[in-house]
Image (cartoon, rainbow, N blue to C red):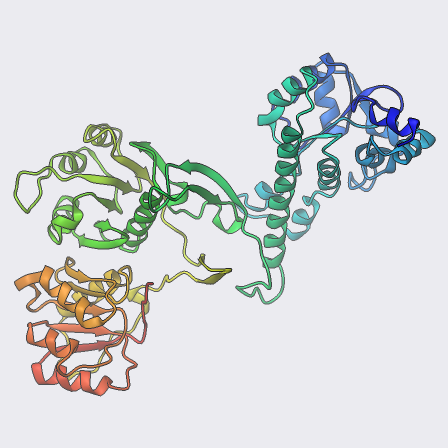
Length: 545
């Protein structure tokens, strides 16, 4: 290595061709800007800034050099061009340890930047604002100069500190004050910078795709921006590490769901808690009338709708009190003091003595007194307040090396034609029971069978490799109450005689609702005719794997 190269490499990284330490600041969100500006000035930095950022700094008593002083060119094209200039990007991108880089800066009178602080036009907030935004306004809110500076500084993070988050201002000032050279600190800031730009670009891409003709559901490629909400104690099992991320896609803004639920009380949520709470909330949100849903291991084990929500709660627990113990309870109505006291004191129907224990209670809202009473049930009880999921969401599921994408299963019984294909036409009550059972079975893991009567789930069978076993589990839980009730199957019955259909008929079921579509549908019809059971075809399947 030549003597000149050695001397250059040993120069302090904060040195510039003019010997000054410079910080470039250009912000849309000016939170804590005065603190940062004064802190940098006290450390001897010359502040270079643009437009509104410069004005805010000057009002805070910080001396500012305007960008146009360095570029010798005015801001133009309504602000589209102000920092896109060699005098700016040369000072950011030049490597201090490369001799010809520094010689080029000296030749053209360009100073280096040691700190670059940038955040971007509020595109995300603009395009998701109530009332929307015009296409032209959306385009004007796409930042160009900001991402260019961020990417440049992040690429050259060995020599330039890049800051995109106001939460890092204090740490950056401490780092500079101590004259530190920790490359890991710099790399972390560079990572955050690239992630910031990537999330920003994904929002622009998502928005622009929706503006294209045709509006196809599935683009050729897309990015899902995720933001860490919490580190979890562990995953599905204690030996698995885990974390919870919130989906920051534009489509998820104000779209409801468990991810954005408010936790009012209790232990931190676990991996399994999120899965179970999501299942319970998705299920109870489907019902129009006051409803309670109890979930265990993502399956609804109790569902009941009543004008009296207290009665609905009791019936939902009664459907399977053993499974309900330690489960998740969800309501689609406000939890007031009376309901909270019932939740707090209700005893298990199995012995009439054991106070029911739950992991989570989910509801759309709580009265102040209801929340106070419910908090007294247990220090660990997680109390969540959630907003109903919007319809039409994209459902994503991971498989090894890829992702499956589909529409969410939003179809309701009101959108389905329950076609009577048997000799016996269902009564009004039987049809209502069939629709209720059909809405429940949609949320049970396949193979799924639900038996219901009078807006109450009596029993369900889930997750069995064959439909007969699921049916038997459902009847075991329903007991004698199954007589005259309605049965719903998430998919067609492949066999009828000496199989699930005939077994259901023999046990006294009143009506059966299934999609139909089997090559042996006629067998199912003939079997139901023999036993005088109403058979309804929906032509809609509700597999849930």
